[in-house]
Structure formats: C-alpha cells, structure tokens
Image 1 (tube, helix red, strand yellow):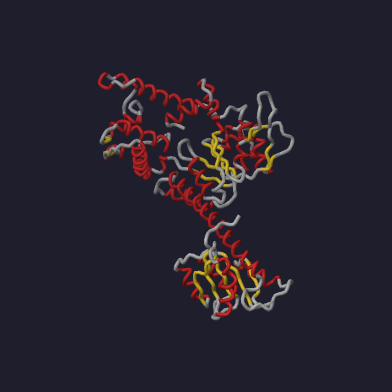
Image 2 (cartoon, one colour):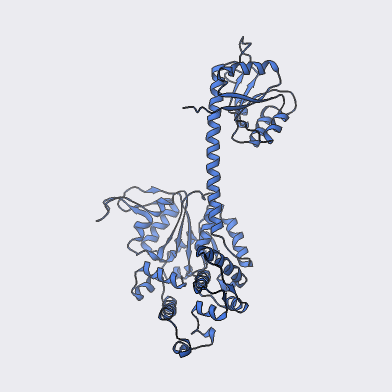
Amino acid sequence: MLSKDRINILLIEDEEYDVRRIRNTIEPFRNRIHIEDVVSDGRAALDLLEKRRHYDVVIMDFQIYGGLKGETLIRKIKECDETIQIIVVTKMTMNATDFEFANKLLEAGAMWYCTKYPGDIEEYIYQPTDFILSIFNAYEKKKLQTERLNADRRLNKNVHDILQKKQIIGESKAIAELREQIDKIAPTHANVLILGSSGTGKELVATHVHYKSDRCLENFIAINCGSLPSHLIESELFGFERGAFTGADSQKKGLFEMADKGTIFLDEVSEIPLSAQAKLLRVIQEGEIDKIGRTESVKVDVRLIAASNRDLYREVEQERFREDLYYRLNVVSLRVPPLSERRKDIPILIAHFLHHYSADMNQKPPRLEDDAIKFLVNFDWPGNVRQLQNVVQRFLLLREDRIDVNAARMALGISGEATSGEGLASFFSKEKIRSWREMEEIFQKKYFRFVRDNTSSDAEAARLLGLAPPNYHRMCKRLGIK
C-alpha cells in the first residue's frame, strides 16, 4: 500500500512548454506530488543538491541546454544522494528494440524513462498513467533504500563500538606490527592460526580479524575447546538430529551452523579429540558438516580462526594433532607477544584498566607511585595481560588513594617468590600474618601453575586435579593464569 507522504520533486527542464505539460500531468495529484524547484541546466541542479535541499525524485530531460546532461548528469546526481530516484523524459523516439539506450540510462542510475512526443498530445506528458505510477514507485524505492542505508549505518556503528570496547592497547613495536598484520589479513577469507601464551589476548585478536572483515555483520562465535568434555565436543560443534541417540529429544544446531556466513573461533584447538579433528578437516576441505543422526551433509560457509598456547607442530610430531589439519588451519599465523616482550605497554594498560574498572565500580582510581610502576614494569607477568587485568581490579578493591610497591606486591601475591627476596618463612612471619583467603589464592595459583607446566594438556591437568574441565578453566581464569 502506498504511503500518503508528500513527494518533493526537482524538475530539470529547459523548455517552458514541457514544464507546463509535466505540471498539468501531476495536477490531479497535487496533494501528494509537489514540484519543489525547476531548473534549466545540470549545474544548477547539482548546486541545489549540494546545498542539501530535500528532494525525493528528480525528473529530468535527457537532452538539456549546457554541457552537463544525459548519463553524466544522472551519475553526478547519484553521487550527491544515492537514494534519490531519477525519472528521465526524452524527445527521442524509441522503439521496442532500443535496449542499448535504456540499458545506459539504468546503468547510470535512472529508475524509469519515457518519451515526450510519440503521439498528438499537447497538454500532458505522454503515458500519463505510467508517468504518475513511476513517481509513486520511485518514492517508495527511495524510502526502502534510505531505510536500508540507515540500518547499514547502525550496524557499522555497532561494529565500530565493538572494536572501541575491545581495543588492542599498546604503543610498542610488537603491538604496532600485530595491528598491521591484522589489517592485512582481515579482509581475506584465509583461515588464521593465532599463537601465544595464556592471557596474551588471542580472542581479542580473533575479534579484530572478524570485525575488520567483510563478515563483520555476521555471527562471531568463540568456543574454548578445552572447556568441553571430549564426548560432547562433536555434538557442540556439528549438532545432531532429533532421535540421533538416547536423550536427543529435539534437533540441535551446532556452532558451525550458527556461524554460517560468519566466523568461528576455536580457542585451545589442540584439545579437540582426534575423532573430531577428522570432521573439522572435512568442514575446512568440503564446506560441509556431518550432523549426528543425519545422512545428508549440511553446507556451511565459515571462516575459521584457531588458537593455541601450545606448540601445535610438536603436538603433530607426538601424534596428538593431525598434520593435515595443522596445515589447513595454519594458512596465516599471528603471534601475540607476551607482556614481558612489550614492557613499554604496561603503564598504558594499567591506566586503561584503572579507568575502565573505576568507572564500572563508580570510584576514583588510585594513584600509582613511581616505585610501584617500576616494579610492575619489571615483573615477568607469567599470566600476561589477563593477570595484569586482575591485579588492577585488586588495586581498586583495596580502596586506597595511592598504590605503593608494597601494595603492588600484595596484589600480585608474590611475597613468597624469588622476586621478592623472601622464602617460605615469610608466610609464617608474626609481623605479617596474612588472611586465609589471601594464602589460599597464593597456594592455588602456585599449584595450578605447577600442574599445568607438568602436564601435556589442560584436559590432563583438569583430570589430575580432579576437576571437571569447565571448573578447571574457571579457576585458572579467576587466578589469572589462563
């Protein structure tokens, strides 16, 4: 159903006779169609458009006085406002086979055209009914295009906001090079392997690769493969059909189906069992997934970003990871540097996290003393940026106006480590008795790190600690070592 809005017209016509005929033709619809301005040449028309005058439809003579006319003028008008619709009227007599002329008009950006004088009509434009309908259709098309452009702008703004909230913070050479690599890789469709220690920000890098690609308006799905029990990972990734096994009361879409046309990020990809690795390889090679309980494959178009804090090639050598899958994932690789290689960024990161968390907690950020900053810059940060993030949160929980080196050490929980110059005896000092919660966290962190360093995978570490994989990962994250 056509809307009742008023349609504003810019008429480009250099003959008064034809201006009168067009006015007469639209007269019965004067409450809906209004000729806002009439100009006799293309330059004058562009001047009005550049002044942001509001027009919905341009009606223009194809052959007008002056050098700017025809397809050139149509293109210039569309450059001013891509949503404006253009109807062309011409003196040229066209026959049913004159497709070349029509095609040129449409390619230039016109929506519709008609002839002026193929019949004995003096008072009205030729084909008056078609002419009026074309104006109404042009207006509806303009509305649709405007709505689409506004929707695209909102989506692009959302993408911009996401990247602003998830900035890659730092001014070091290593981070500048990483940003450059992301900008080069993101527009391609190549699979990406992100390498780096735990806590360096591999998911953050994956987020930037996705939102700087042409898939940015589609789904970005991230999954930590190590947090899923091995017997559930296939159904999570690829889904299943109703009745595929006992308890499958309904169909389940896998993460690859949900990420179709978008990006899926597989963190800790080395934790995927060999049986599921074979299916993952098929997805990459064929663009198809095999759902449990379904005989036919399901087509998907997914960009794959994988990450690992382990040496994947060593995993291949030890036959824990498929070699063919390794090469399929490692089309392009990005290395995220540890915090110890970008010490210049530590004060910048501290300031960023202090601002972010103090605003979130509605409190004034504390001031860090020079000795505290120097100490933090020289610390090795085995948990990388995530550990630094946790330490900054602890600063705020102290609710102190300033943070000195002792407060920094306490937030790190390193009083008993070699870097502090103290031994185990410091835990049993009468002068510095610690709370049980603080001692428990220090011990948990040390022991969890010891177990992780002496096991082949996070799944094995969780098993030896007697924890379910999700609980193990949650504990590592809380302790700042994951």
